[in-house]
Structure formats: structure tokens, C-alpha cells
Image (spheres, rainbow, N blue to C red):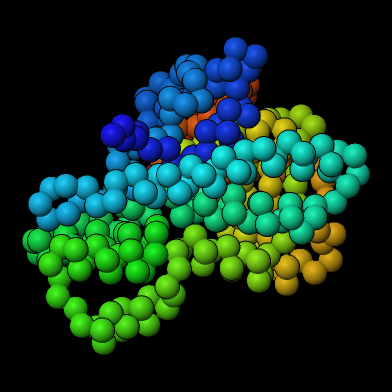
Length: 295
């Protein structure tokens, strides 16, 4: 059987929206002392080896590629939704309930598949690292990206003895039996609404950790989706006067601020359209200058 080893953590269809006519995206490694822009295919970045995989105690993979396949199906369904949404908004239309549902899943999927989440689970915390600790970390990760019951199944399959009472305690502690993806979806549906912003000048950039969280008082999440557009997900009660669901133009200084936060949010890379090289390098230089001044 052919398995996927390099598993993407940013939707390829979003990265592709930053490509040029040659289907190349520009990328800048922000960790280099002298950052430069190079071009590559959208499929060649923002992936990690065995991103969603855990192993059994015997070294074999536990349900290999199941999470990758699940996320790939969702991503495939979302990939055809963005252009129709933008086209409708450009004609003066408003986001429908169906549009909001698609955007909810887009944000939730990106938040859950973040490498930062995996680092948090598998961080070195000073505890003795033995087989029991490894089982615990692996099961917690599966509970977060798949479901509580999948994490329990992993423990049982690897010889961790649990009676029904213990299993129920785990479910009660986790406070859900579905996936973390479903939990985030339910939160956004209860609390948030969407609108889209467009830039008439400066381009948006994308980072390898693309969703900005709580960077503005009136925006819970911000997700740039191409050089012209970013999607805003805001908690309704924080901006009761906002006319949700429409397209709004924003000034260059606001675009610059969003991009500034994206650079700060990046783990290693920022992504842009190759033609925006000069703008991105100048912005990165400004960010690095501010960092040196604050040190």
C-alpha cells in the first residue's frame, strides 16, 4: 500500500492562490540572516513528515494516514468554495448560511492541524519519558486531532488496561467524544460571524502558521487567503454594529499590520506572490529592525 509520508498542514489550495502565472509561489525563510525570496510549487511547502501519525509500542503505525485522509477529503470539498464566495461578494452579495458553514470548517481545520498543537502535546515537560509517558502523549494527540474514542482505542490496542469506569472518566475529563475539529466548529458557530476584507494596494502574505488569533479587539481569527483577500472571523458580541457577511475594503496600513502579525506568527516561512518580493522583503526588514530595537 502506498502511504503519504509528507503530510501538509496548510491547505494546498490556499497556498496555490498566492502563485503566479507559472504556478510558482514565493517563499522567504525568515530564519536566514539575509532572507531572500525563492520560488517553488505550492505542493512543495508547509508539510511535515508523519505530521498526524503516532506509533504503537511495537514500532508499527497506528491507523496510518487515517487523519491525513480525513483532512484531505474536507480540504477537497472546501477548495471549490472560495472563488464563488468572493465572486458573490464582489457583486454586492452577502455570505449565506452555507458559505458561513464552509468558512467555519476552513478555520477550524487550520486551527486543529497546526504543528504548534503537536509541539504542545509532545513538549519536553521534565516528566520521566518511558513507554507509559509515550502512550499518554500519543493518545492525547489522537484525542485532539481525531476523537476521544480513537485515543482510547489506541491505549487499549497497546495493552493499557482500562475498565468501563476508567474509560468513562477519560471521556468526562475530555468533555467531548467527538474530534477537536468538531469542538472548534461548534464554538465558531455559536459565537462568531464572518466577513471578508480586500486590499486595494498592499498585498496580503501567508505564513506557515497562517491563522492569526486575537490580534485585534474586534477579530477573533484572521486568515489571509490570497494577495487580495483575507477572511475575518469575529465574535459577534464584540462588534454588535458590524454588518456581517459583506466585503469590506481596508487601507494599506491595516494590511501592513496584518502582515506584520503574520510575520511574527510564522514558524519558518512566509508565502507570497513572487511579484510582491520587494514589499515582503522590506516588511521583513522592518520587523527585524523593530526586534533588534526591543532587545
